[in-house]
Length: 351
Image 1 (cartoon, one colour):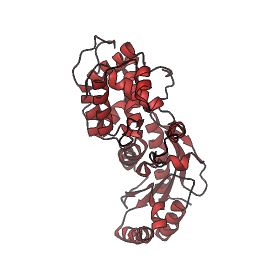
Image 2 (cartoon, rainbow, N blue to C red):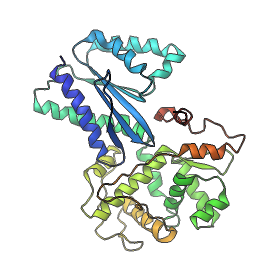
Image 3 (cartoon, rainbow, N blue to C red):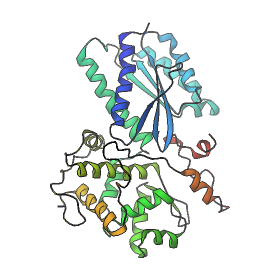
């Protein structure tokens, strides 16, 4: 029978992941428990099955747990929560070292995340359960959401994007078009944008690529969306949604700013239009850019979003991009592979 601590940890994992889903930037759906203590499906860009195992009382089960997690080919993310002790850490190091020493087995470590919980954690104490909730919320935000699911987004990447100016609305129109269709042929790209000036487009593309928001096929005009770039666009939608609803920043929006170690910006005191929002910081400046994206380029970033039950994430149509680029014989088939984010389209498109 599982201990109260074991049960509390599994329940907290579920609570934290479903709380993250409250941002509407990620979807969390129930998974089959099978042999694991917790299982779910993380939805964003691609489906990422997640499983979790907890080791609390039975230290001798560590090697079996690791083997079960790593050999599970159906799961992209594998969480292992362990009661901390010097002996456990030494045993774990030995087991992981044996996997790292073999190239084929080393690949199975991809997606494994290990969390240590103090050995004196007591699930019967309410203040310790609250601590566990905060601890998992912080670590999951960084180790799962930002590091993997949101494409490794960083404060620097967001600040680079926020700081870029140019013609109002253009950077959002360009990013939106690349996310939807990619940039393969510049004349067709300009036609879809409804904008012809080369200089501002080149400057915006250079910024997007430097910040890792798009990926440029070397020595070509071609740009494609990165997971990080898709998150920046969707996070902007989260900001616009908060402003449109007029109730102040949502708890989830504030949490994302906090996790990025950025001060929560002032909430706009005026309704959004293309001209009348008062610029007080980089975020309000970008709200103005987003408003002009609609006014000048006909692209409403909230178009199609259900305000009552919003879903701000979508699937990445990587298959369409790959099909189009296969027309170019020199296009590398692994161009989109980003194993650090458990995003490997060459594998996903054959599922």
